Image 1 (cartoon, rainbow, N blue to C red):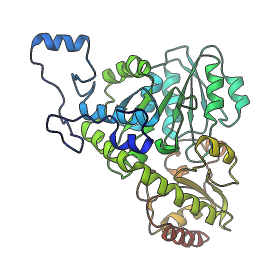
Image 2 (image 1 turned 135 degrees about the horizontal axis):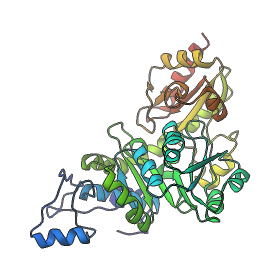
Image 3 (image 1 turned 120 degrees about the vertical axis):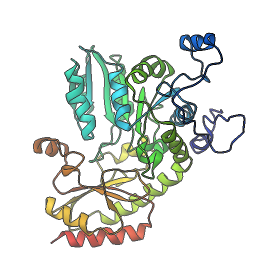
Length: 396
């Protein structure tokens, strides 16, 4: 496959492998294992399994391999390992490289499950974790040390949409030999250039924009071939976090239309944010594409000025107003996913970040009135009218 293709072309054709039948759409190989012609062939494959040879679906599968190769090419990485969910990708990327006595520095503005892995799982096994304000480079410089093995960031944080300077953080991390792990869900593979900007490892919840239609769970870890095959694969193939072939096929189909969907969603998100900013029922409108956003200048250089598909609205009346707003919506659905073709509204304080203490939520800016709004593919005018009507209802 050509490495000179644009992202849109890679998303349609990257990694394609056809059977003897020459099918147009990628084949789904629904099998848990593979047959060997001889005992000698079986022995040889367990010693050295080639790129077009497979042993067991937990180790690899032709459909899954197509997805891995396509997303790696799209992201600019050498290789990838697909996982059963986005959180399996975060866990696999971090746990596979760390051991007792290692040190990790992480931005503190994270999705609740990411925080759980860092605060509860890694520390349980003797890994020390330091949290910093991800937008403050001086805190990063003060936190890293010789035993720092990894730094972890969400390139755009969930749900307060802080944007991390990947290039600057990577320079700090690499000065002590640490790997930079970037959870890139909100930035999307369409707008991201994280590896080019210094990330060593990129993880995605493929459940979000890659599928983008609410059908299946999936995740993926992207990085150097040495890291993926030498560090990640041994951990994941023995602990069982593999993506199913059917889900991999769904993700391949999602990649074909992802750029069209994500660009349309981001365009609508920009329109909604500009129209709602300053609304009397809102304390603040958070969207990286707004000039008022604290990291708007960084968005121009890091993501080509694209603010993404998600905005957050902080309602003046707190939780009661937020609930009235949610219950008044007629087009968006109330759920906890994002990056979907359908617009989705979420109340993080009582759902995705509910396990955090009130003090932790306050520190992260997750107020009782905050709504995370994932913009879908509906008409922008219809969405705006619905949001304005719901805001009117939120006043009580």
